[in-house]
Image (cartoon, rainbow, N blue to C red; front, side, top):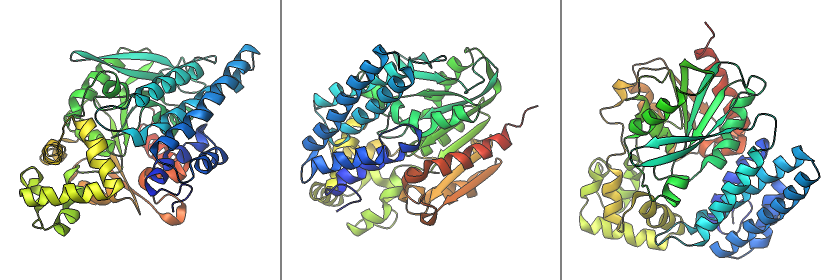
Amino acid sequence: MGLLFKDPLLDQFSAMPLGLIPYGGPDFGEVQAVATEVGDGDASAFYAAWIAPGDRLVGEAAMAERQRRLATARGLFLKASACYASAYHPLYRVPVDPRLPAAFHKQIAAFDAGLAIGEHPPEHVQIPFENATLPGYLVRAAGHERETRPLLILTNGYDATVTEMYFASAVAAAQRGYHCLLFDGPGQGAPLIEQGLHLRPDWEVVVRAVVDVALGLPNIDPKRIALSSWSLGGYLACRAASGEPRLAACIADPGLWGIAAGFGDFLTQLGAPPNAADDIGNLDQAVVDRLAQTAEQNPRRHWTIMQRGFWVHGVDSVRGFLQAIVPFTLDGRVDAIACPTLLTRAENDPLGGTAQRIFDALRCPKTLLEFTAAEGAGDHCELFNRTLLNARVFDWLDSVFVPD
């Protein structure tokens, strides 16, 4: 039994909408109502229970817009987008369940409808990338929309999209006076769902394309461009900062050395040698088989590896997954990070376990922020206290970007 949902995996997925409450996501009672509706149900029940309030909110938003209650309409459309975004996470797998892109398209339609309402709506930004296009949104600093301001680029991790990132970080960034460019890259959001682009480790190549576009946008201070991230983005942002010198600051929430590092203790329990994570792509087949068997029996590991992992990395076997995650490492890269860098570590978040390792290896100006359970911020990405995370992060960024 979890916090709200009876199924522990479904309860894990509820952390995201709960974390969006302070910035306009579904309220606690709405998440609780979904949990009650799901009851003993499975992923299909979870999907249906989130789609229903999304549809209801879109209907209410459309009515409010027709009646020129624009602030209400905007809030309802945006809240609906978060409901749709929550619905499909348990459905991650290959082949793709048709309900997933259906919900995603509803999500983006509601998101765009909400953002379009207002005096200074965010701008759609198309980011050319190799033979594809990455979708982005430029959210201008509140009250300073036409002024030249520092820019915060936001990058996602394994399974969030621009919608969740907007609530979790962009709203706070705009309130603190930052222009904010959020985007989904390969393996994330629309590039994965609509274009079939898989996740890649060389995020400096991805962010280079984003910075190229950002420098062509009006009212962007080219000397004050920061990159911020969450979840797996903690690795991606550090990797990007190691190869994109135009970044003036980097924020990794949490500090994450790579993907394979998190498998070390677990692999040892399965009979692998203590240093197995250092050569995870070449494990003995017996260990790989035990990992597969364990994942089949554990819903959370099954979702992480065989559903999300297979789809996002474009593989079809456990060994293929292990080989795919090998390049996602900061080995040989940390010394190249030159800009001021902020790392976070939450008390109960295993992904933050390598934050100290990164901090010790950095040769640039650096800060490590600790978040605790006593503050209500001890979980992954401080989801249950994003207001505290954002306050401390932007206080730090303000100190880095002191006006000339």
